[in-house]
Amino acid sequence: SILNTEVVTRLASVGQIAAGVAHEIRNPLTSVQGLLQLLQEEHDFQYWDLIFAELNQAISTIESLLSVSKPSLQTESITDFSLCVELENILSLFQQDTYRIQFKKKWLDKAIKIRGKRSQIKQALFNLIKNACESIEHTGVVTIEHVRVGECVHVVISDTGVGISTTDMRRLGVPFFTTKPEGTGMGLTQVYSALYEHGATIDVKSTPGEGTTFTLALPVSPRHKPDVSGGAEMQPIHLK
Ligand code: ADP
Ligand code: MG
Image 1: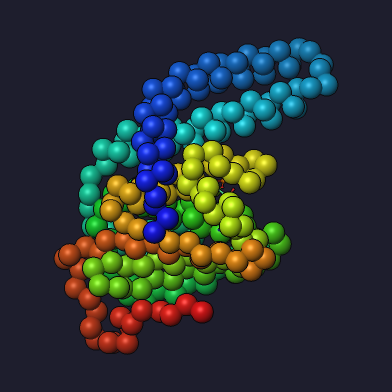
Image 2 (image 1 turned 120 degrees about the horizontal axis):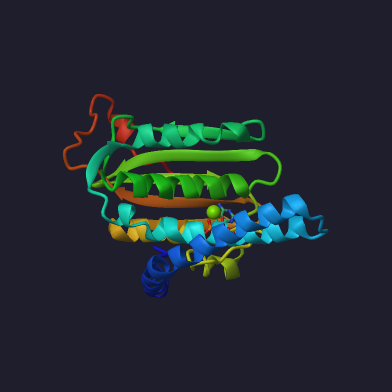
């Protein structure tokens, strides 16, 4: 697991700061944005685009911070929900990418149910799939598979993207760590925080230039009765 204590400690402090400060910063930033738009209508200025780009970047960073510390997510109750339904809903949000990315689904046990906080897990799966898509420069493949392993279901999200260097690997999940010009570096922070809350684990393997594989072990609903009609369906997948 890459959920080390350093990341978890940073998460805790980021959560506290975020909850207290993000709101206080977002509100004035949004007012400034509105007032500047009024000014822009009346005055020509060569740097308007730059000003709005910088402001939008700041606002989106604040919003991603708020999304991690959102009280509604923290107080969300635990339910049993269908993993396939969530994954299908998430994939429908990536329709605009299908001209360059081939999505492969290998979902063995379609009836499988997860026990946990649905929105949090959905957000985490979305963040991982989004990163997978963003790692692919032109065209490539994103594979999403899941397989039952004892009391867990492993969700494996792999891409044929740029991969992650050994140095960057150690910084994954650290708040604000990003290698993208427009990135916020909060996606994996949310993923790790959601998984930590569920006592779930995550593992990452990557080869620069070849691609990356994230494997999550999520808790299966104890009420879920495995589909024993096709015994072979329950075998773990062996990745290359
Ligand atoms: P952001 O996507 O805003 O940069 P994230 O927390 O989601 O923030 O990801 C942090 C960094 O981790 C990314 O900028 C990227 O360098 C790296 N990363 C995450 N997922 C992948 C992936 N599937 N392939 C390559 N790099 C990745
Ligand atoms: Mg991201």
